Length: 207
Length: 110
Image (tube, rainbow over all chains, first blue to last red):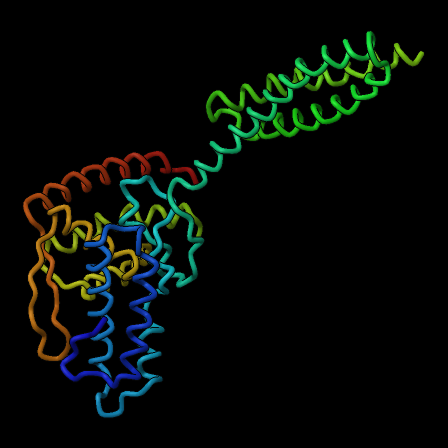
């Protein structure tokens, strides 16, 4: 990217300006429409030239350019923040603070919430299905074929309980985010109850 | 500055930009300079330039380029009829909201 100052800058100084513009360009790439990105860069470039033009061209040095760049918002300031999608293009971080933004993209946290809710629901549901499918098989083999198979029951119970508890926690954390958290809480609770009762056949066998 | 304050300022930034351009056309950095000094808004280039480019893309602003004898070519922005309409809409909303909030807060801290 090149500037169009009345007096061209020394290449070393120009590279400082270009580096800043390139960084802003990278910050905006893929986040705002191309036309907007080019427009923003044109304005920043113009502002830099405006500020440089206020300095003595005869004694313009690296420190002057760095001072000019230091007056600008940091490149992170151009990152869109968490806003409704219609406002994504206009958003940026708090400019007056000149602090780095958090770099979060719109929709990110909501998507993450949806994923964890789904994960919780699936974990609880699978643990309940597993406990219902495995228990009859283990009991059948344990009582009719191979009694020591009943020792598998506590293992099934512990694994199901752990899965159900994790699902239940995720469900509670994401409650109100659709159907999956409800599924997680209901099936997680049921699985916990069943897994607590699961070692009973083993106790009957032992005593 | 907390998130609420930041979001509030950003919400008002578009209105502020349009309001400045309703009085006269101006180039990007000049708009930033005018907004920077407004108490409470503290808007700077990283907020203003994205708004300018978006409003221009949406047809609310027209752009005219002019060579500057001292420095770079300047892009002057001015309101289009669509921009003026948008400004009126935003200003009406702002007046309603600020009026309601002011009456709600009246006497709260006395």
